[in-house]
Picture 1 (cartoon, rainbow, N blue to C red):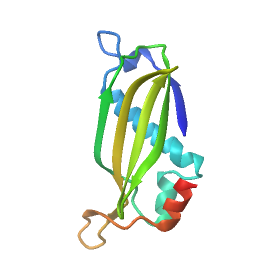
Picture 2 (cartoon, helix red, strand yellow; picture 1 turned 30 degrees about the vertical axis):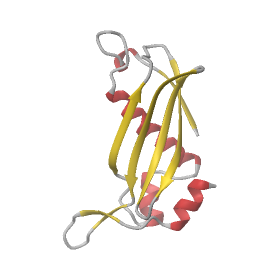
Picture 3 (cartoon, rainbow, N blue to C red; picture 1 turned 90 degrees about the horizontal axis):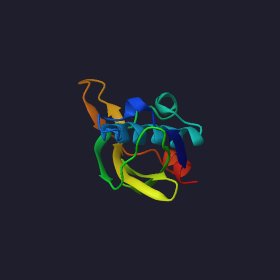
Length: 134
């Protein structure tokens, strides 16, 4: 799945290049678009699967080339790895043929204990896995 956007002036630092935390915001946005392409969003995950969402356990990025305001970028995102309770979303940011950054988000199938209120991870619903890999 690919999410395309134009970088705004406010996304940049004083040097006129993208302030790096914005990439992580865009990774999340791209993941939300990936869900939407399958007819899902964070609210429907709660309603359909009974979870509180897909919180992050880890995130990282490698920055390869700078980007600036006015650049049109595309973020290609897909689920690259599955485990029982977690999955990894891989992201690649392109400007035309140039790769600008590569990133990942490790997300878990989030639940909340009814008695203690503690956040935890549960086994991923097989229907979600099937939907996201079809």
